Image 1 (tube, one colour):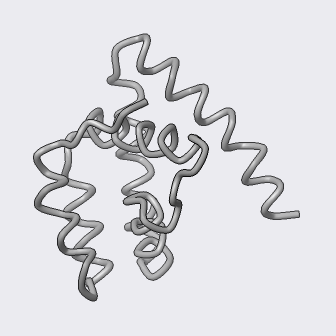
Image 2 (cartoon, one colour):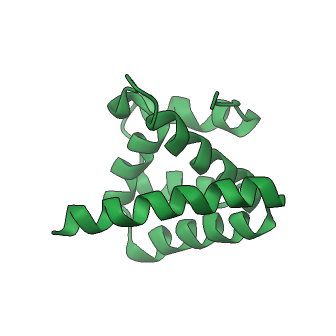
Image 3 (cartoon, rainbow, N blue to C red):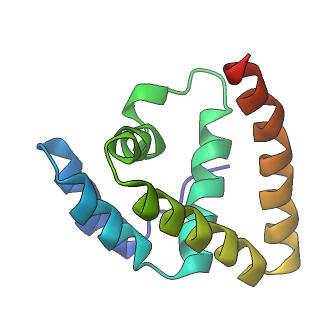
Length: 113
């Protein structure tokens, strides 16, 4: 599951090297095409599931840190954008995204317990 770098990632991720305004960053991320954003999220989760993956250096981990400081409406907008994007994906990629979501559900439940 190699990660395919998208052009907009080249613009956003350097912002993460310095202190970032969570609100502005999430607004930029939420403006990305939903299917592309959802595909990126699936790729990130798949990459992190590989042995030896460095979670703390991943883009997804960095986004999670920004999400924690963001207002709830921005977090929801980003999640809605990703879910909308899953619906726009071609069937094989959508099936992969749903498998990832099914894996994440029990993990989230375990975290709450």
